[in-house]
Structure formats: structure tokens, C-alpha cells
Length: 98
Picture 1 (cartoon, rainbow, N blue to C red):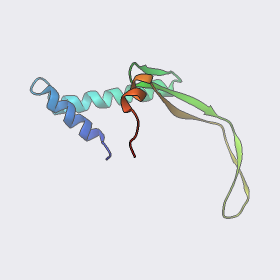
Picture 2: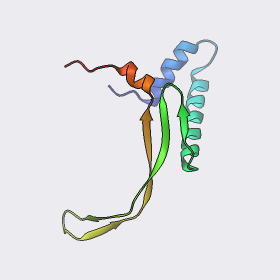
Picture 3: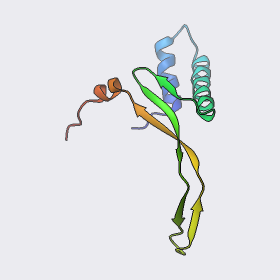
Picture 4: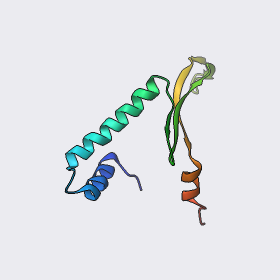
């Protein structure tokens, strides 16, 4: 199952009703996401206790190959987002039963 931002807003609004409107919750969630993105764009590390750490990592430049033509294609260095789950989150997920 995939949980979308709208599902998250709906769940939070239901738990906060009637003190906070759904529109206010949607705005807060969007502000939170915007602030996370801004912090990562500036190269900052975002730590949320009990959840994990969001950061960026620099990928080295490399030489890839076009699968169709087999021609070499240079891939420039780039920053990518990374997430490391906290021990509490990992423990709460537990073992997967098969």
C-alpha cells in the first residue's frame, strides 16, 4: 500500500479535529516538506529523533555506456539524497514473517 501526502493530511486532520482544519494541516505538511528540501539543498543534515537522518551524498563522476550504441557517456558528479533509519524505527519494524 502506498500512502500519499493527501492520506497523511487526512489522518492528521482527523486526529486533530476540530482544533485544526484539514487546510491548515495540509499547509503545515507542505511547509515541513519545503523546509526539509531547503535544508538538504543547502547541504545540511536533517536529524529527526526516532525516525532517522536525511542528508546528501556526493556521487563521483563516472563513465557509463549507452546500452544501444555502446558509446561511452560521461556522468558528471552529483548530489543525491540519502536516508538512514534510526535504531528505534528499525526496531519498530521488527522481523518480516514469511
